[in-house]
Structure formats: C-alpha cells, structure tokens
Image (tube, rainbow, N blue to C red; front, side):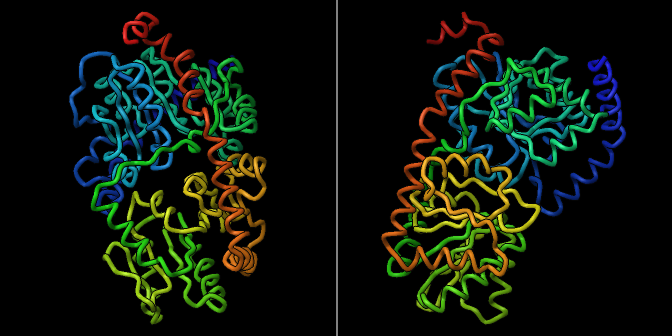
Amino acid sequence: MAATKGKILYKVYRALSYGLSPFLYLHLRWRVLRGLEHPLRWPERLGRPSHARPPGPLLWFHAVSLGESLATIPIIKQCILRRPDLNILMTTTTYSAFQVVRNCLPTGVIYQFAPLDTAAAIDTFIAHWKPKVIILMESELWPNLILGASQHGITMALLNARMSATSFKHWSIPVFIPLISLMLSKFSLILPLSNLQAIRFQLLQAPPPIISFAGDLKFAVEDIGMSVAEIKKVEDLRAQLAQRQVWMASSIHRGEEEVILEVHKMLLEAHPSLVTIIVPRHPLHGKEIALEMQKEGQNVALRSQGENITSGTNVYVVDTLGELRYLYGITSIAVVGGSFLPGLAGHNISEAAAAGCAVLTGPYIAHFSSMVAKMQQFNPMSVLQLIQVHGKLDLAEALRNLLGDDKVLEAHRLAAKHAQQALACGIIVGTWNSLDSNVLRSAFGVDDIHKCR
C-alpha cells in the first residue's frame, strides 16, 4: 500500500517537473546572466552532454558543491586504483565547485555539470551516459534521479549521508513518507555521518540492512595540487605576514562579516599589528567587504588584485577560490564561519585542524555537529565552539586568550591536529570496502574484480 502511494506521488512529481520545465529553463538562463552557471556549459544542466561516452561500464559520482566534491576524490582514486576497468563520470551542481574540481580530478575522469531534476533532463542524461552505478554524496535525494535510475536497473549508494533537521521535518510529513520510503528503498548502501543521521534515515523507512558506518569522508580530504605560480603566491603571503600576529575567519557568509570586523576592532586595541584574514564563501562578497571598508578609510588588501600587506594593513580579504586549504597553513587561528547567524549550518572544520590551526566555530553548526562532537570527544581542546556570540564578546575573549598566550595557543593547535589525524585514519579504506562489497561486486560482477587485480 505504501509503495503504491509512493509511486503515485512520484508520478505527480514527474508530471510537475515536466510542466515546470519551461520556467526552470528561464531560471537557468537568468542564473547564467548572473554568473552563477557556466556561460558555455550550462546546457549540461539540461542533461545535454558535452563529451562522448567511452565504451565499457561506467560509474557515476555526484556531489553538489566544492566540499562534497573534494571529499569524493579519494574514493574516486581508490576506484581507479582497484577498478581500472571502469569509466568514471563526476558531476557537480555549483559553478564554484567546477572552477576548482576540474583541475584536481585524476586523469581520465569525465567531468560534467549535474542535470536538473526534471524528467526530461534526467532521462536525457541517463540515456547518454548509461551508468551501471550511481554514487551520491550527502543529501542528494531527488525523485526523478533516484527513481528514474532505478527504473533503468542502476545500482545506487549514498555516501556521507546526512539529512538536515529541516529536510527531515519536511520528509516526515505523512503525505511524503511513502515517496521518501520508496526512494530510500532503491539504495543498496547508505553510509550516514552519525548515529543521529542513521536514525533519521531509519525513521524515514530506509531498510536497516543497507545502513552501515565508515566515518566522515570530509576528515580525509586530500591536498589538491597547486601550480608553481600558486605556491609562490601563498609563500609570498606567508613572508609578508612573518612578523605579524594573524587570525583567519573562513567561509564567511553575508552578515557574518559584521561580527568578524567588530571583533577585529576589539582585538586591535591590545594587538595593533594584528592582521585579520577574511575568506568569504563567495568571491563577490569579498570584493563588497573590501569596497565598504575602503569607503570607511580603512587600509584593506584584496587578494584577487595582488595587493600586498603593508605595515598599515590590518585586514586582508581573500576573494579567490580553491586556496583555503593552503591558506590555513599561514595562520595559527581559524574561525570557521557559516556558524554565527541563525539559519546557517556550519562548514568543514577538519581542513583547518589538519593544517594545525586552533579551531573556533559559532553555535550554528547543524551540518557539522557530528564532526565537532567527535573531535571534542577525542580532545575537548580541539575545537572551541562558542555557544553565545551576542555582542561578539565571547569570540573576542576567546581570541584574546589565544593571541595572548603562546602555550595555550600551541596546546589548542596540537589538539586539533591530533584529533583530525586520528579520526581520518581508516575512513577511505572503510568506505571503499563497504562500497566494494555492497555495491560494486553486485553491479559489475566478481569476475571483473578478479580480472583487474
């Protein structure tokens, strides 16, 4: 009965996606004009390929944005190493992910933008690429994609599986339960981020046998390659900061710069040579921050313009993409944003910890609460989560304590680095083993695996 209701709901959703296709097309073109989609490759979002399909079995990895994409790459490398007989297709949704990921994918991996979840786009995409397996990252639960793939006999897995409290609440509405239950039943493997996430998937009627655990792949994100010119830029910046105290506010969302800049002013009273590095989530936001500060007469340097840090510079704005992991290496303190305003849900703290930064974050970390909890369980000093930031006093006080005591700062840096290293250990192997035994062997056959080993 529930399966029948789920199928009816899917037919309604599929029909709606057909009817809304003209409006989604116009919305897509509007995003192109705003620079939010690739100016030439945007038709890929309609399922239209820009690359020929190679002969042989194909495995499709899909992630939404940059963080999820980078977490996928170590698994792709394992696949290339252990299953060289497979063709690999990687898709992402966001333009910002494309700008970074295209340069760090292993040789031979085909890259495309992901199709919109309309019936026409998904059907066109699957008809061209004919994947035997689809590996989805985190929370990509789209009816046309999942149920359309299932109708073609495609095996699916969901890695780093998570569902926000808001999404869980929406899917838990009785009328939607049959649809999400039907969708989750089509997976052969779900690897949730935490026990809480596993419970949410089970409450939405995911079959218990397909749920397993391997750890958070974002703990194990690898360094992406940098060109000689890029390395020189980072080293030049390190040299400019050699005699200065530095802290960084990374992945800052709109509105959070007000918190950061007010705290910056408080800290300057005791540390006049301090440099605050601000790395907004989106480069355009960085330019806006710099412009506003320049209007106020403040000395601010903008990275995209190649501006150097002089003796009078106290704020450095990074309005570029793909450098954050390396820029963490030039600061001893990282305040990870996306966590200081209601409605936000945090960002990956493991990159800052891996670089040996003392890590701080705000109270709104729903998407990364499990990661923070695991690090704090390993060592309470590994992450400083500020429960209240009213008046910015808590953040300013925490930073004063770190900037004013080298021993305290070093203790927090070591705690973060050791926690990250311990938690990252074995995640890639564990994920690969689950994927291999539960998905790839059934989809591609044991004989193929034996032939390539």
